[in-house]
Image (cartoon, rainbow, N blue to C red; front, top):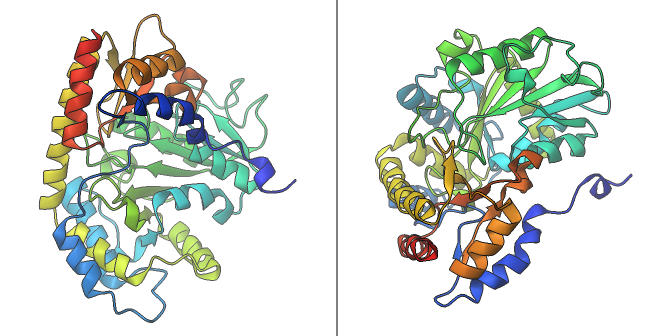
Length: 381
């Protein structure tokens, strides 16, 4: 079987017809589907990138000492997480890391990759790229779920031994935040099975009605990071999606293994991007300003959805509202918003069968487009 044959179609390609309907609406489309940043890259970051542009040599796969120190400093300063700078590893955007982590860990057909039942599709893709068994299950973070229960990964009816457990808090798509207790249960579950736990924390800076906690926080793992990785992105915090800027940290032994693989494979973050990341992680003011922009847009869209008869569930953190309208499944709700409001959103079914009753609404459009969406939603009521 070819590698491509293991993969499903790209889910965002399904939005083409809806996009055309939204574009036909008077005043044009408001795209709230993918969640790509639209605000300018902060000057402090652009200046750092430009200053490092004369970089003819190969960059350090491990990251510059300045970048590693800035990442460790940000975690300690903002999230009370304490890691050695030597345990920080830059990645070429977190999607790249998520999709290739099972391969880098050496997982294969005898292994299972577990991820939340409502989840970013790339966890599943990573398992498929490795030839491992992808399993969507919330059981591993359920403290009452005994090992070997039918349907439990590693138990009857589920192929392979647990090799990798993904958790995601704040969640994409639901915005749900897991408590320190729930995270602690997940870490204990993974450690008891010799399974790596990887925590996708790309939205950790964007708590609204809840305060996200890292899986590396002392309240979760008592300061011992063995078997645990946490992944962080600058795409949303600092508008650096175009720079492909992220990093992973946690268990020093795992980081050392990943570094060796990435050296051999040439997975290097460009030097100017590393300089930009260093500046971004050393400056909190631009992140506070961006968070305020997102908060204002969130309020407009939440109010508009409520006026249009939608219920918002979870959505405690992150960049999305997880919404449902009684009597409509996700496809019908997407059609309604595209045709009657010119608003493009993502159907919840893209993230798992349990999302069929919801839509995911991003608040990463400009202020003008978000204001237009709010007015259109109120008119729909």
